[in-house]
Image 1 (spheres, rainbow, N blue to C red):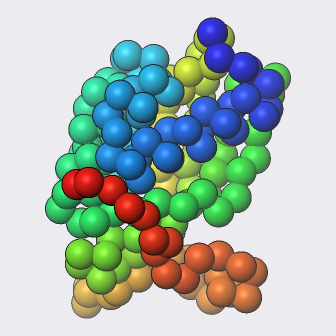
Image 2: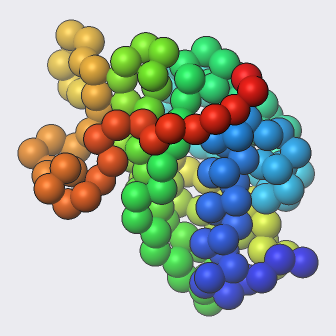
Image 3: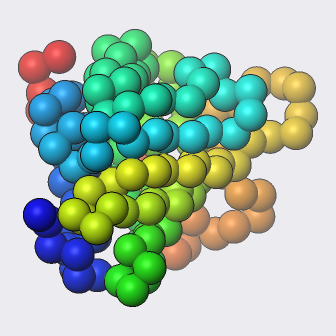
Length: 155
């Protein structure tokens, strides 16, 4: 059983993101119930990740293909409901783009992630862009990361 306090739930999310950045399948899976699901906007290229292993392997694949690096930019936790919302940035250095979005987390009684629902900023224009974020929002002025942090890894 994990800590189900607000601080404990946030710590689980941060451990999961550390596992993503380290491309560590076991570390990520340790944060989830085995039958957890990660949902994405309709039409997202990777589709839904069904199960803890699929979630972890999906992000390891993103690290390999895209050089993915994630940051957690904001966190709100509702301890009583065992839910949290985060705002994140997903840097994709190998293709020179980044994506910003939010995720809604639902935790089990054991303090493990059962569900993630991702919502992210996407352009409504057909031409390719190098970054996806909410329009007219002062990310830099408010202290959001504008470049991927340096992460050493063996992948």
